Image: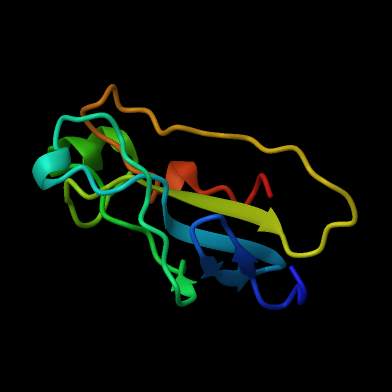
Length: 128
């Protein structure tokens, strides 16, 4: 990362740019697999198709289909829009770092029935 004020990074699939909040870089909605729709539905995950332009990673992606009422009551809030195209991740990191840092991977709970990475209980800003 060349400029800590601009959260632009290169991944093996293409460049992404996120947002800065209170000295934390945040990238939201980064695809980690091809959308499991159409011919890919109920199949093993496939690689993401690389992109040429800088991809905006400034908003959460869709959550998987679920019971909205149950999620609001038990899952921590409103997960937003739903779609089968829901294989995305979010990253929080300090804007300024002087050495490599450990990485924590957190999968939201919900027993495969409710939950989303966009819900308030899974906001990684405090950890970053």
